[in-house]
Length: 55
Image (cartoon, rainbow, N blue to C red; front, side, top):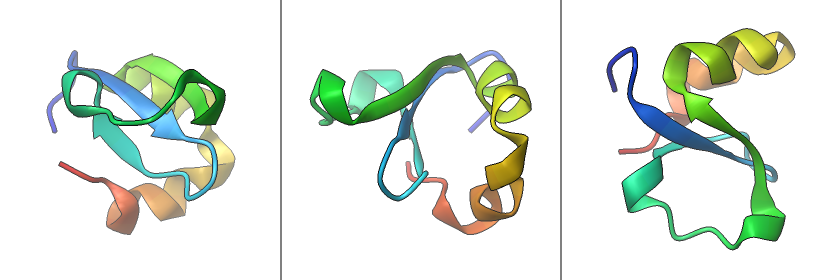
């Protein structure tokens, strides 16, 4: 994933998916927006982003 890409964050596993590849229903999306914005708003999950980023 690259900065400025639109992503969604899974509310259960805290994984990040490309917004256009997301299969999640709206009720399971915890956050969405540009990659850097989602990461900055969810600092408590930052360690998880290293291994839960999904393509």
